[in-house]
Image 1 (cartoon, rainbow, N blue to C red):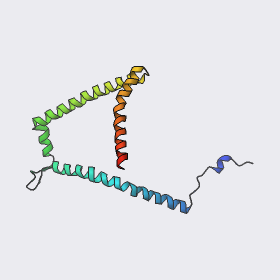
Image 2: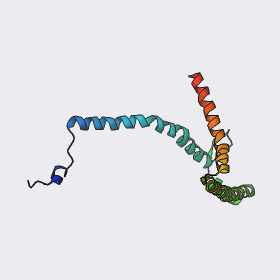
Image 3: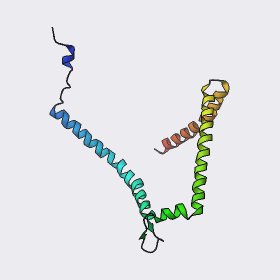
Image 4: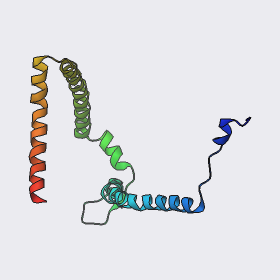
Length: 146
């Protein structure tokens, strides 16, 4: 027999018309299932962001008609407002120190907890106990109300 075993599997078999129709139907179902998540994203995130951008580009006191000023609000914020520059500097400094110390202490604590000694087991228990305890209380309360 000269037929190669690779010839049997060289090309993928085309699905039948009924199979293709069910695949396309499942794709439509996936689009319909993603519609609630997409609508939540649009209404709870995208629309507020676009509204804030619209408000940021206008001069408006909340009573009279808004006046479009473009990027002048941002220019004033960056150059004329001393409080805004101080607040921005404080936020950047805070982020810098938090990232360094929080990440550093987390890595040190994690490397310490990798060892399986008696003290690390106690620390792990103390660390994870509140999470497990609160989670079990919540699940028990939910089970009572269902």
